[in-house]
Amino acid sequence: MNPVAWFFFTRGTLAPIVLRLAFAALYVLHGGQKFFGLFGGYGLIETWESMTTPEGMNLSVTVAAIVLTGEALAPLFLLLGLAVRLASLGMIAHMALVFVTFYSGLTLVEQEFPIFAMAAAFALLVSGAGSFSIDRKITRAFRPDEPNGTARQSYLAS
Image (cartoon, rainbow, N blue to C red; front, side):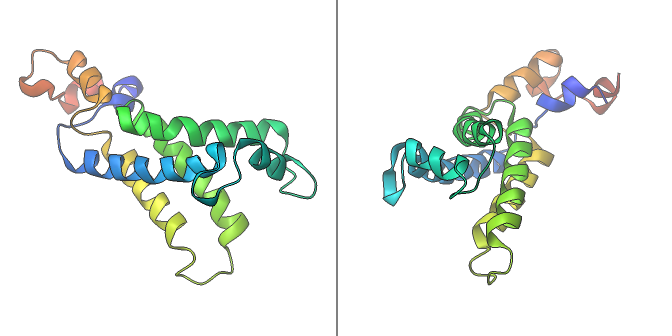
């Protein structure tokens, strides 16, 4: 399969849009705590300090910047339906790291969010963005002569 075509390929189905909008909304709330101090969060400066100081997580500045950038951009990509597979892969990696670092050893009830987040991101990684997405417009550009822009597997393999 052509890797560029696979990266953006998505069918015009509705299920992925529901999942990606709900998931983006959750991540916007989650990011709002870290960036703006909403919903009892610390805000960007305190979050940065808690991530990079020895008293906190003691992450390198590079890792902290990647994590915060991913938390800011991934929901935007999901809302727009742009590079949804890349955003999903980043969210899987992020939630797996969070799960291992903070949630291991807790009860299943306390582990619900990272498990759901990884499952939702994996579903989007497999399905793509679905209808009403920039990825869908790019998919249609690969095969404009097909009805509804549905690219054939044979075309993607070339």
